[in-house]
Amino acid sequence: MSLIFSTEEGWIISHLQHLNSIYKTVTNGDSQSRLMFNETLFEINSQYLRENQITKSSQREEIPLQSTSKKRKRSKLLPDDDLKEINYVKQTFNKVVSLAKAEGLFSFNITPDNNEAARVASQKVYQDTFSSEEENFYGCNDADVAITSEVKDKRYVFPEKCSFYCYDVRDIAAKLELNNQYDFILLDPPWWNKSIRRKKTRYLEASYKMMYNEELAKIPIGKLLCSNGLVAIWCTNAPSHLHSIFNDIFPSWGVKYRAKWYWIKVTQVGATICNFNLALGKQPYELLVLGSVLDGNEINIPDGKLLISVPSAVHSHKPPLTEVMKKYLPNEPKCLEIFARYLLPEWTSWGLEVLKFQHLSLYAIIEETKEAQNSSNVDINQLIN
Image (tube, rainbow, N blue to C red; front, side, top):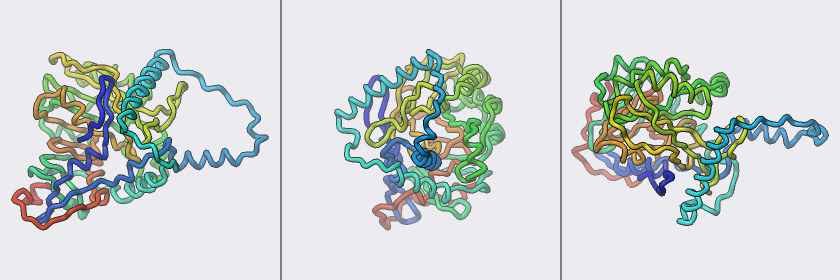
């Protein structure tokens, strides 16, 4: 489904392939179809520059030569431990990608254009899917097949056996049972970020409600995670956020740190979307920090694994972990994603943007047929309550 290459060091994941595999069969009343996700959003053909970065780059090119004679301050190198980590990630990445290229997994005849088509498509996603009023509802698809249905006058697709809650995370104790029922909990927090805060004032559709680390520590993960459960949290490379996970958030949840993995974002030719940076600045990867219940059974979670994928052009559209985590979880695990932005089969999803990537405008309908199916008789009252 999503894993297209595996080594001891990590995996190469196709997010697009995963999305298309979920919706091979979709029921809508008495008709069936296959949905294909908008592949333009994954057309990352060169190192990724946002529109403001491209504008700044153009402005620099127009500056007269005499104005560049001033000496630039040298950026201070990161601490030695950080440099060792970056070197490990870089060397391991080069090894995995070299093996993958030998298998013919990456394209070679790609014309770089600053990812223009993907950037235009992502702006349309913000405009089509954003609404500040769509919250405070929940629902599920109990059918064994994906379906389409309306929610508040908009059309969405729902994978099989999914449930979802569109509420603020502060309401989680009032809406979910706290009986330690989940084998795996995944979180993608809206970390407090100055650049996102600035963006919020300029372009509301590209923003989201950020949270302080102290608020994240109050989420009742310890009452949701089973005794042998695992938790994984997406994190930026900001030292303050990592420090908070290790020293505040995990202890508050009753969780012990187990491993740190690296999601490396690449172009269609297998190059990183930006250079590895030895000074303070943007890196071509984000972190996935994993933990387990303090008093639970020891689970062999390897450290330093790499997750490599072509990223979506839309902010915070994270790659799927379903297949990656399978070997570390029981058969038919109960899984919960908090701060979710899309739904997964047999998962419970929670977040104010929980249906963001379920909007039908993101999919093309393929091979529609008029065949009545018993599984299509899903009562809309069961779906939205």
